[in-house]
Each structure stands twice: as C-alpha cells, then as structure tokens.
Image 1 (cartoon, rainbow, N blue to C red):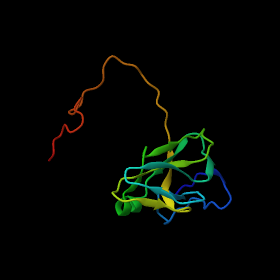
Image 2 (cartoon, one colour):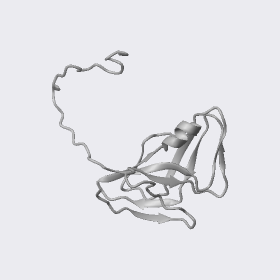
Image 3 (tube, rainbow, N blue to C red):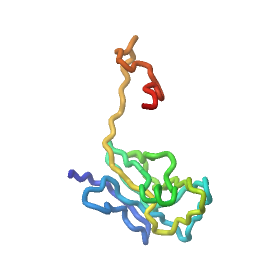
Length: 147
C-alpha cells in the first residue's frame, strides 16, 4: 500500500494516531483532555485531539466514526465524514454526539474517531444548455421503491 507523508505536530502526552491492523484504512485518533467529558443523551461536544497536521496539497483527511463506539454505545461523529483541508493548520477537533439513551463518559486518551487520507479533485464547471438523459434521469430519493 502506498504511503503519503503527512507532517504532524502533537502536544506533550498525545498518543499519535495509528492504524490498529495492517489492512486498516483509518488511523484511530484519541481525545486529548485533562478531565473526562460526559455526554448526556443527544448531547454533542467538540473534543480536542492535541494534534495539528500539514496535509499535502491535493489530499484531505476525513474524520470518521469508530464502528465499535457506534454499535456498543451509540457514540458517533457529526458532520461525517468531517473534512480537514490541506490548507488547515489548526488543532484537529472531533464533533462527538451521543445518540444513545444513556450518558457516555469520554476518557482522556480514548480512541474517538478515525482519520482517513483521501485524494481530492477540484471541480471545474462546464456550463451547458442541457444534460445527457439516463433511465433514472431526475428520479430522486426513494424513486426505486422499497423492494
């Protein structure tokens, strides 16, 4: 698998994001806080990670939820996938939401999301008078029915 260099700065005591298995697409990223944060049901908070990155031009880093937190505790991320642009140099923070019926305590150092590096293509519009037709054409949400 090709590896792309991404420069990273971290606060003292921060665990660097890492791949948990050889074939993982995302690197787990951890919460960087002095004290735990408790999320009540349907509550959200912006959780710092203590890291900053210099992402190569032409790439983005997507922030995605961890499936284990989602299925076991109803914890996911808003604005998913979150996009970290190549020209952003601030601290990476993760919008965590509790979709369960119970409080959830995020502990300092807990793995709260995944970072996935993606190639980005910018669009260049070609304004035209019409678009090609397809079988679907303008059929939108639910146009194929339930079955």
